[in-house]
Image (cartoon, rainbow, N blue to C red):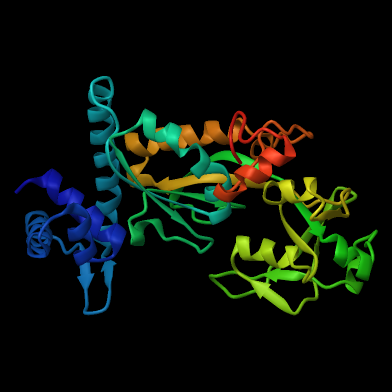
Length: 334
């Protein structure tokens, strides 16, 4: 029995919680995966997995063996990478997922650079605001915003962005400009609800050095960042979202900043990947690249100070940006 292959198959079955998905990801026949796991259990003299028609679960022996396999496989990958790195460029399929707004405004406009540097990487880019289970869905790396909860993953902070509260000039003309947090009770907002829980997210303001959360009244809620911005531009109410998403609308006068002295706390942006893949060269080069992209843009690096050297755009914004006579992604996108 090829014990290294058996370890790889076993950890993939655990990571994906499925014999079938593990077989597909490893490009092995489904019966071969079953045979390898059975052979491994026979060799070790221990049951590693509890299998039913609906779910898989680790036995105590399986959990202990899994943790050791992860460390061993990581060391093997690191050893191989140390010899191959000078002779072989990163290659193979790389599955990435990130919020749609970051992907469209910051990453896709720069992807040609990544492709030219790493032409042997087959990049599969998912854009969504929904929570992604890296292990279950076989995703190599995700870009996440906010405080991270899952301690079983490796996270590298790659940026930070400021949030801001805005509304259309028409809304302000009709409803007035709020001057304090208390005055927000007289206003309506477009709310954002969690795709995972369905709960509406509170708004946040930094008042006298303390974070104050506010529940906003509103008759409309969405769970997509681009739809959220679109509702704000339609004048349905106040919206609170990352400044990088509204910069061009502020510059064009389509939106007006509200309570500029009471912005929310900045939110961290992280690249997150499983422990078992933290040494993958293709993941490593992507994370290094996207960190450099964010670092070059004040709007995503946490260094915003009125610097407009990194103006964001979507694909259809090229002409609009040229009309503003501002540089498009000079330095980096965000």
